[in-house]
Length: 345
Ligand code: TLP
Image 1 (cartoon, rainbow, N blue to C red):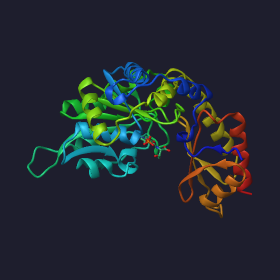
Image 2: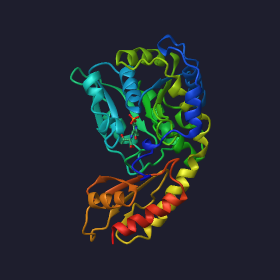
Image 3: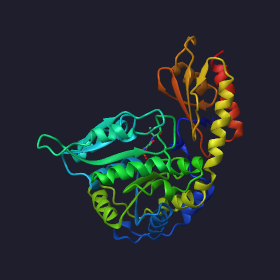
Image 4: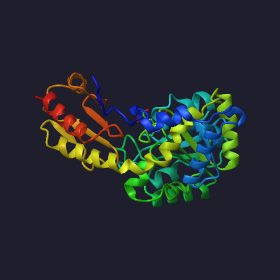
């Protein structure tokens, strides 16, 4: 069965154009910096984000980890959102591999970290304290609804960070979604950040890969640590070729995913037994709960939907996240709404 898969935008398979470019990619040994396709991808990523340099990495998790390892020393502290991917979903890498301590503060419903909370979390100079080194933001903020942070907010946090001799890292896994949703350039959105990670393998539909961007010096150090972690790759132009199409073409079409997420949310709001979050969607994610009086739980709904050819994922016992992407068309949206209605009957 050909499933309609709304579990994440990470499920996107490469487009036919990507597969062709991958087959024809010019390659070389990237550890020697000899892969022309990787070099092109890295130059393009740096240029589009308005930073000096970029590094191709296998995953967003590795990109974020590299940023943390470059910015921080062992024993340093990082201010992160308590709902952030870095804090919740990266297997504790910063602590396990970097000896770095997270200082989690509450994410506000709009995905931001309150300035007063950040300010209160910055350690004073004291022999007892860890040294606060870095602030991390996430844009779009996944768990808060795929909600985008504004350029103005990011500017304020950059100012706060730099004023206090801290660095700002942006987990911009879906930064192009954030830019399109707010009709602002990606460059503008990331300007205040010292480093940015963004993913090619989510809404941009590449089969694998993320980019880390920053200054030349930062990226040189990240390249070294990537090697240390076993992430030095060889003829990886076959993958970078897909990433170039992600940047050149797929970044331009994300608005379609946002429109379909809206259509999906509108449809689901008509289904009795479902409560779509107020304001959802902000970008390509629809968050919803089962109404209190529904006698089944999310797992049972997931199984019924699967039997009907639709894959969805739950966030908790009664909460779902549905993510639109390149392979979700209008017919898939309609089918999903009717499969939900059927599963609740
Ligand atoms: N997010 C995945 C899951 O890990 C939850 C998803 O389906 O949304 N930052 C953010 C904001 C992310 O959402 C993700 C992946 C990552 C980083 C990590 O990227 P990968 O999966 O490439 O390591």
